Length: 408
View 1 (spheres, one colour):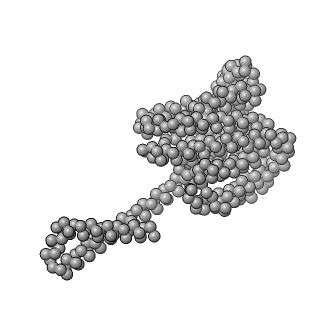
View 2: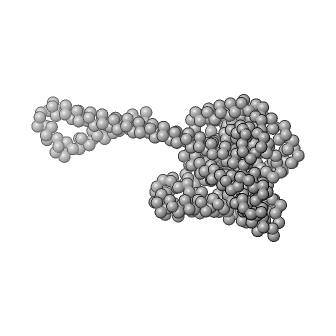
View 3: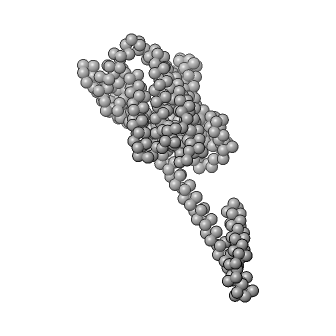
């Protein structure tokens, strides 16, 4: 309908332009041929212009369809990469803790402060390559400050609750992540979702819970024993993480409206976000050290011993088999996972990136049933795994086929 209106408008504009040209003197050539032939030539020229206009409209529509297909392929590839890296992230974290089982706090800080160095190094190279512009670097820093604060709070509360809750209960509580994601997207991004889309997200959550059905009873006991406070704290930690992803989406949308290039590079967001996160982690050090049971006076010795175990050197390296390879693999894959998640968020939405992350949970459960090095005896496949995975995949596929409602 819109194309038809545009075509008609262009037709009359072309006809008007032709009439003005004739009035200016170009019509003398036509009038010299005779009354009837002059009218025929005018019709032919107007018809040619209308045909050319229709061809241009058709070409624009084809270009639009091609761009839509390209975007769909990009989102699919980014989502698949996010799922694969998400599985690797979960598995390698477990493997990295084998040599550093006595130094998990050291591993967490190695990742946090290591990201700052790596991200800013990449940002520096991209700036000198002309990929990152001065305009991108001059963006307001307040949103990045908020990103860093939310990431630090999410990490701190998640570690505090994770130290008390069992591993079986965390995947179940993780399903509130998607609820927070949809809620905040509606409130702050003006997104609207169809009822069937919300139901399909519910199917995804149910599918994840069923895949760990065998652990459900033990998880229920864990939640009861730990008390409601730690469960709520874990849920609040997911709220901080969701708010972080929604704020990053707001940053991308704001950049698309205000920057001349129409976009901001991923590493601008990652670099400043990770720098502010490291700053707030330093402020939270007293709380984190108390959480891990490390007296502040013993922190230098703890970091020194952790570094010796990480490098697998010295007399303290006994029991640190697998280091530094496994911790470095975890840090590298975790960095790739974060970049992939942010890229998927940039080209799609925060909800799509959350769905991709959720999909990695049952695959990780399956991977842990395989014989992996350093982990000893493999775990058995939970009851209901196939049923849960099937429901989850159906929910994801149906959600992806459901057209979104435009933003308000």
